[in-house]
Each structure stands twice: as C-alpha cells, then as structure tokens.
Length: 165
Image (cartoon, rainbow, N blue to C red; front, side):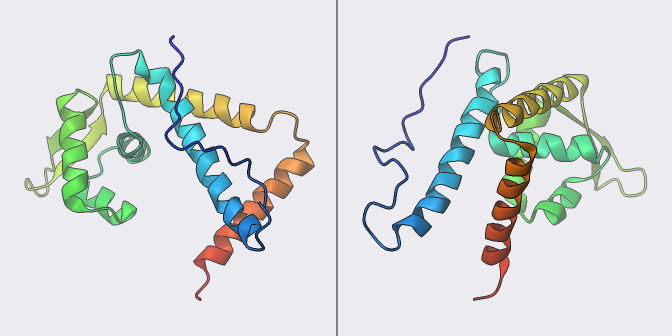
C-alpha cells in the first residue's frame, strides 16, 4: 500500500503556548482537531487502494444502517440532524455503488427500508477493524489510569462546550 502524506492541516506550530496567555486554551481544541484529522486520514487510508473511495459521512451512513437495518432515510435524518438533501445524495450514491439496498415499506410504499448489502457489511467491517487498530495505536504507552484520565478530561471539555454560555 502506498503511503500518502497529508499536509493540508499541518503547520509548523508545535502545540505550545507560544507566549500568549490564551494560546494554551486555543491549542487544546486545535490539537483535538489535528488528532481527529490524523485519525480519519489513517482510518480511510486502508480503503484508498481498494475498490471503494468512501468519505467520513458515507461511513457514518453505513454505520447507521449497520446498527439499524431496515431503517428509513427519514429515520437517519431524525437521528443525525443532518440536512435531508445531503443524506439523500449520500444514500443514493451508496445504493448506486452496491453498498446499500432498499425495499419498499409494506406499510407505506412511499418509504424505503434500507439495509447494507454483503459488500456494504464487509466494508463496514473493514472500517471497524481499522478503527479498533487505530484506537489501540493511539493509546500505546498509556497506562489504564492515563487512558481513563484522558477520557475524563475530554468528557469535561465536551460538557463545558455543551453548557450554556
């Protein structure tokens, strides 16, 4: 597999406070963003040389129908809060590529029940396997206590962002 280098979201900054009083706060979320970008780049690298070019959102749609076989596009929209038109394009593309299959809902033929095809299930399995591998790689050298502390700190950051101003 050819290794690619993603330099779009990289800069010479090292993640230090750079002498500014608010820089450490800025650097926390910048580092979280960079870690997630790096994770996604490595997550999808496993697919680049294969028959499927898949985006992050397409993987989310596959994951949803993997967890909720027979759900509708409306179910997906309600659960994800995403734009219905964007989801319609994603679903259409995944169906055209043989990763999702649809059958009319017997109770309401205006609705289509969506399920993963065998190829879609295999692709989702590959993505899950790669996610587990990367999750292990990400915490190499951390004790279970350090992993728990990191998780607690990130949950606190999330809670802080969820709190009203």
